[in-house]
Image (tube, rainbow, N blue to C red; front, side, top):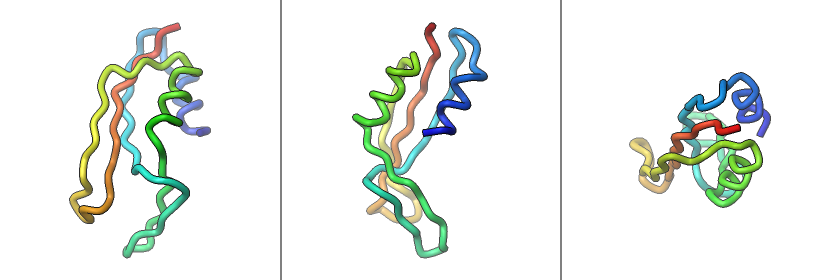
Length: 80
């Protein structure tokens, strides 16, 4: 994921960041025309690990707009 890699490049050692992504596979366009890329926890955690990002906290949250949609959030810390 290029965005996470860009954020990784600008983080200082021990820097934190929070990311919130929609879960699933592939991509989805909602009723308002917004397109979302969908992510799986295991894939993201493997990417975080490769980049030296430690998951300090994670959570799943049901979407306010559509209860069938689930978002996953991560508090990450860069340890190099």
